[in-house]
Image 1 (cartoon, rainbow, N blue to C red):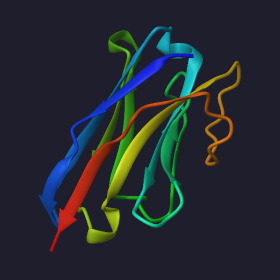
Image 2 (image 1 turned 180 degrees about the vertical axis):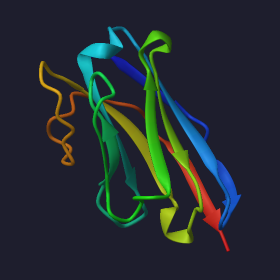
Image 3 (image 1 turned 45 degrees about the horizontal axis):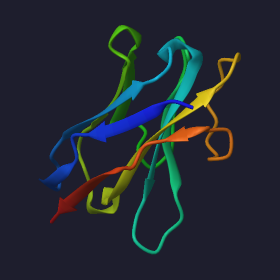
Length: 126
């Protein structure tokens, strides 16, 4: 398993932007499909989006499509989540996760992901 550390969370007004980073250590990043998930208080962890090993494929939840963008820099061992036009419903703890796989598939469920970060809080105010 690799270690993942998220950063970039904080408090932002509705309509604003944030960029989260996920630094991966202890492994070669290009081996992993990567995902972003979030969990709001009292709710289950949900898929936000993900990016395949090579970066050739991305997927997003319908709730963030068109507002969020995921990218990765394998040379820097880092994945990014650019969040624009934030809404109060985006308030949650955001987690990055890594799926050690030979395939280029982004899964929207948690089970394929072997390693998880500890999360970073994003709070969107009215």
